Length: 524
Image 1 (cartoon, rainbow, N blue to C red):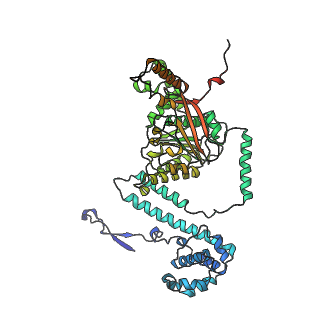
Image 2: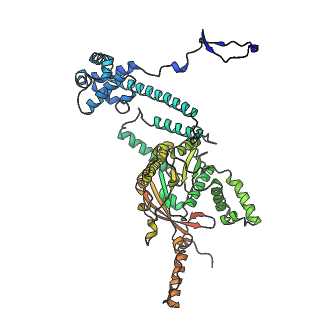
C-alpha cells in the first residue's frame, strides 16, 4: 500500500493526514512503452543484406527515421546510400562505414550486423515488414502530437486562442497523413488507359452535359466545360471590374444547381464562400439585390418602395433554402480554410444516395491577397507567402476533390497601357499564381474606362470638331454599354479565348450576353 500526503484538516473534521492510494488498478498510460517492433526491423534489415532486391519494396516510403532502434536506423541508412550508388549492401561492404559507429558498437558491433544477415526473411515478406515499421512510426508520431496538443492547451497564451490551436493541430495531422504513402508508386499504362476510357464513357453518356460544376453562364460553361474537380481557378481583375459580383453569381448559380439537381451524385452538395473583404450581410445583400432586381444602393439607403420591399422579402424566403455557406472571417489562413472545408465536407448530405460521400461541391475565396500566411510560413517576401498560399489552395482542391475558385487583384501596370485588357503578367505575384493554377480568367469592362475619359473641348478646338469627338465617344460607350468580357488567359485542359457577358451595375448582376443581331425581329 502506497501513501500520499493529504491537506491538513482541523481535528474536528476527523480526517487523517495520510490517505492510501489504490495501486491495484491498471498501469498509468505514462508507463506504457511506445509502439515498436524491433524484431520486424531486424528481419527487414536481414532481408535487405541477404537480397538487395528487398530494398526496392520499401524504398519509396521507408526512411531511417522510421526505425525505433538507433543501430537499425544507422544500418538502414548505410544500406540505402550504398544501394543508391549502385553498390552491394552486405556485412562486408557495411563494415567500412559502420565499424566505428557508436550506435553499432553499443548494439554489439559487427557481430550484431552478421547476426542480422543470418535472419531468414524472403523478399516477399520485406514489403510487409516495411509497412509495419512505417505504421508504428506514424503511431509514435500521433502520440507525440497528442502530447503537444495537451501541453499547448495547458499553456494559455494571449495571442493564441483554443480554436487556433485546433486548426494548428488539424494542420499537423494533415501533414502527418500526407508525409508518406505506402501504396504509392507507378501504375501500368494499361490501367491508366482503362481509367481514361471510363472518364470518356461518362462524358459520352452525358450527351453534351457539363462535366464540372456549372457557372450558370452558358457561354462560359461552354468554354470551360464547367468548373472541374481538383482544379484551382483564378478570377482576376482591377477594382470595380465586377470580379466579386461574378464570383457571387457563379457561387449562387452552383448552389441553385445543387438544390434543383436530379443527379444523385450532386444531390445535397453545398458551396463554401470565404468572403475576406465583405461581411456576410453585405454579400447576402448583393445576392438579394441581384435576385429581387432591386437596386443595392436603394437597399443600403432605405429608398425602397413597398412593392420592392415586399418582393425582396418574398425572394429572401426562397434564397434561405440555398445550400450556400458564407465565412467572413478576416485574414484567415489556408490551414483554417482547409479545416473548415473539411468539416463542411463531412457534414451529412440531405437526400444523397451515398451519405458517406463529400457534401462539398465548390469553394470560392474572395480574395487571394487577403489570405494570411500561416505562422510558420510568414516572410518579409510577399511573393514567397503568395506562393505558399497558392500551393496550399491547389493541395486543398486535390485533397477534397472540388474546384477552388480564388479571386485575385491585378497590378497597376494595366492602367499604364492604352489597351487595358489584362494579361497574365499583370497578376500580382504573377509567377506563382500562374504556375499553380489550372485556369486563369480576367474580368474586363471597357465601359468603366470610357466613362472616365469623357471628352472636354480644347481651347483651340472648334465646336464642330469637338462635337465629332463627343459623338464618337458616345457611340463607343453605347457599343460597350453593360458588356463585360471574361478573358480566359490560361486553361490547362482546354482552349483560351474571350467570352462576353451582360452586366447590370444597378443589381451587380452578370448574365448571358445576347447579341442584338441574334434576336429575331418582331412582327411588323
